[in-house]
Image (cartoon, rainbow, N blue to C red; front, side):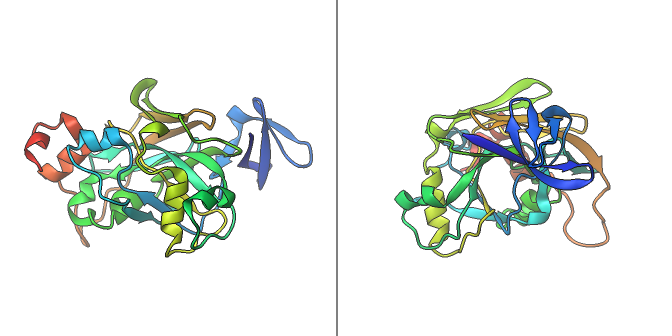
Length: 277
């Protein structure tokens, strides 16, 4: 396996290779990985995410998987990086983490079979598919503001090539406490299937990102929290939750706190979840 990262080095965007605890530029300059200013490891033209894929998440929501995966789109303006701040607007309450694995496309991909998909994947990185469920009542179909707001797609720290996705653990920590634990073994549709499914109708370009789903126990976080997602062999992605400006009240739908919002944000802990079918 090998890992590359994109960082700011002396004011310039540089792609570096990871060598243990150091990052090495092509000209030989070295910088400690834990002090580097990271950027998203890839520059996608699109970010596509699957709704439900992990069996533990399906069981938590007391629902059934559809016969085939369904997806939503996150705008590229949602991109964030390792060490970056994730903004919860003032007046909102339900900003949830979702630890995931991101698939990164390496070659233009269209109309391929699942068994061919590995040849079109550049590598993988860690992702956190944040969701602002205060807007779920208006955006549940598209997930546009729920999942697509600025800063809501951290990726990193690096792009890892030669990684085998089978049987890998996914863990999320909030302030050092383990809050999510799952495995790629509980995914209904694996990485190759997801790529082939999307590429039937949508051309995937080099750098494009597919988010492959989260395990159970996505919950809200608060300003001041530090959230880390760790995936076996891919590293640990760290972000910090901060308060942002309030959402304008003179235009558009406003944050809500309905049963649907609370039950989605709080999962199995919400007392009405058992009554919602």
